[in-house]
Image (cartoon, rainbow over all chains, first blue to last red; front, side, top):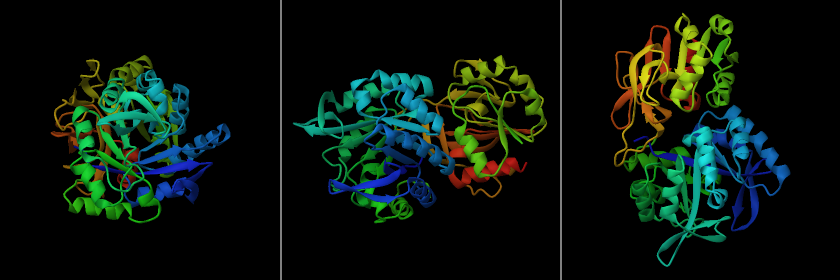
Length: 251
Length: 194
């Protein structure tokens, strides 16, 4: 198996990296290209850039940004946010993105996964799944967890794989933002049910949380934002600590 | 000038960007004259190997590539089509490397595609000058070249496979040097210095 990957996630709005503070307001945490380059130099294995722009004008800024990221960054990077058509994906591929991630649009139009994967290969498609546990059933949500769907996590993940996704980025909306760790058993079950890699997201508060989801949860990668942005822990230090716990990482 | 072969296979922007970062002059081309007069030739490739081979043949590129005397580098699918045969679409390749490309077998704990960073071992070529054993490089592939006399580096998934191949002036890497951080940049630079 390849090394477990550590993936910083950068939310981008209007060309700047932003980070929510206690669900109110957004703090500017820097230039996305510079921040990405710094993370790459510190040992990030990949980067994820999410466009959280509100308007169409801001969206075109994002494509230009993707072009600048591609010129500068020497590791793979994924982009997402608002991708709802093959054309959106094509535009970002052309700008230099290695992978794209789709979420809500894939739930309302699963054919989108098939179409993008057929055209550009499964390595290009990361499907993000947000779910929350309700009465013992993991239900898929969309629009940042605000809308509950009829889909069940494991069935949807299997369909997504069948349709050509190259990876799944799973976030538990029950854990996201809590900094209390990930639902490790759910990750382990999800990983065992799929043959494509699973990236864990949302919930990391400390090194142990990440170690647990990679080890007990058997996730292939962990994605995190705030613990890196505010310099609570550097990527290099995190990876050294994971390595000391016997987890294979690229150092 | 470096000729990057244009044969309609995937995105070459990241390779172009990597060459740019190294300060190299490069050109995307399928013109036999430009390919022959280039100092180095790179055959990139993302996607399906059978389609890649068909696209090369359609453009009469195999006979141009076969006769080159300067350094040629195939990357990922570009390397696979330089092998004798590939299981992907059951097609013959250019036969430069003495290997038959096979698919990884899915088994518990082994994911296909092999996607991510794996360490390089058994490196035996100037291509890896200054690269330490165990250095990680980035792979994305479902098919692999088994070990053969042309193997110049190996990696594991979970068995050993050829991470890089060499025959005379022809080189191939299964991994993506253009996405492999500083290690990848060094490997590309080594190739350009051949």
